[in-house]
Length: 400
Image 1 (cartoon, rainbow, N blue to C red):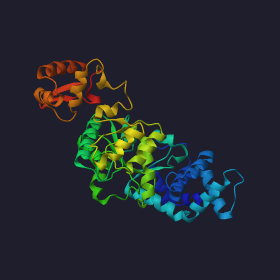
Image 2: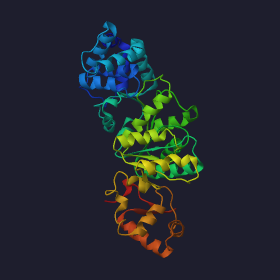
Image 3: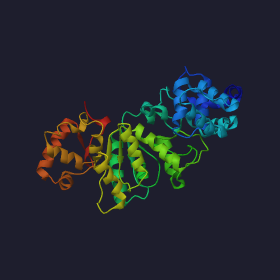
């Protein structure tokens, strides 16, 4: 089947368009096409298929699977039952036409195909082991997946104004300092995080549960287009695949794996965001949760994370950043020696400038002390004076 497809000139052309300069030149066309085929016949995170590919390589595993389907082979290995059940799952989707359509549709869309081992492949996903995606389909800039620092920000679709405000402030301040904001493109907290990152000219990545050609939810079609223009829209399932409840839950593991940390801003008691938090905890990624009013059902899941899952309480971008770099954050130099510096920097924004009197009001520090602290912080390189007032410096603006 693989060799037959490679004889088709349109398939070879589609592969060339999809792979790009970051492709691993040592990988054979058979291996590339086999990974595409595996992404077509399996559901996301299929551990049986993942183990088979890890053991044999995608191409040999594919040939073994096809022979098993066609000839009714039964594996003598101890995991034979799992393989037989896998064959039963994969058989109905075994179609050369489906693999060809996946390639042609993605090439027509202008998407990119990333495989493990490519220069642009996001290596944190490899921590998923046998549940690592066989491939990623990407609209936008593949380099967004390799940003030096990344944080997953997730939460309720039916978010409150409070939740969206906090998500926007945290995401915007992080994105303004070079941190990529990773989320799921949904209504509510996801959308607020993506929009805030875009609003400061930052990088943001949206993982979809369906194909990258399917805007879901439909109301975020324009937002997803903006994300593709400034960052990346990503899926492990090929174009044409519809989002389903199971695929949303499986997609969450990618958000958790890619982030240096995961933050849940608002979540109900049974929110799907808790599933993302569970993946982050299982992977050993730092987990943060934003507290809300104790009477708010929209924050019940966050309070549950704080109480039952050892999540850290976070309320600002600085506190979120401390989840993964508590001792190396450039803006935290001197924090431990000066609580007032901590208070003042927490009150400041990397996007909006304020004068000393406004910063005094926001921080609760006397105006005279604020002016003295600003002078010291300016010398340190943590803040800058602009025509609109004082702002925190972004990572790229800090002086060495």
